[in-house]
Amino acid sequence: MNPSKTVELATPALIIDVDALEKNLSTMAVHHPGSKLRPHTKAHKCTEIARLQLSHSHTNFTCATPREIIGMATAGIGSDFLLANEVLNTDRLSALAKVSENVRVTIAVDSHETIDAAVRAGLRDVLIDVNVGLPRCGVAPELAGQLADTARKAGMTVRGVMGYEGHLMMVGGDEKRKTRVAESMRLLARAAQDVGGEIVSAGGTGTWDMHDETGINELQAGSYALMDTHYAQLKIPFVQACFVLGTWS
Ligand SMILES: Cc1ncc(COP(=O)(O)O)c(C=O)c1O
Image (cartoon, rainbow, N blue to C red; front, side):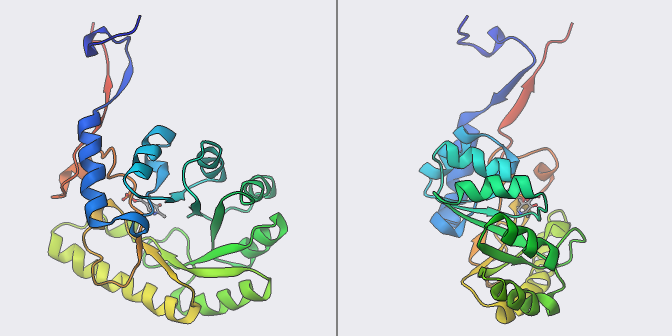
């Protein structure tokens, strides 16, 4: 059966409201066109949605795992990928190195170990991941320059820095959030000066319009495409576009 109405769908069914999705993608693309947005694919893990993001002028993507990048590259979507998490597993990094023969792959590093793992796998392009206040990963801002020197000595191309301010996404009140984002991005700017390179990458859906003066040159937002009920609490112009249809008996 090829259902033409929602009620005809077998449940549970994952529903994407394409009008809402389209509105979200356009709103973001107007504010952050082309390479100013590096959409994070982990928020949907769906090449068809990534293809829509591509049609909205974004050719550079952020991914959370090597498999996400391999999936995107195999589908022929995007030309410049950032792995925005640290990976040590040699098999996974080697698989990533294979696709880097056809598309540009840059990986986040925050330690000597992550640099060594990238070198062993044959990956060459890195961003120095800086801890801007989210206690998850990232080198201390004052050590970022030294780490970049280590990476360059190991033969890597250091393209710049990234620093995800995920701890600030839900800080209540736009003004307070904006102030905290500016503080956090000062840490990244300091690191960027020491590191060099052309990329300063940060940001997410909750801070999507708070970076006009922070000095970053690409935003890594992902949730904006489909949104979620958590982010719906914020006053941002993106709407929920993903639902699960169930049957109540
Ligand atoms: C490193 C990194 N960048 C960007 C994002 C995307 O943020 P958002 O879901 O707020 O759009 C995430 C999400 O967790 C992330 O981990």
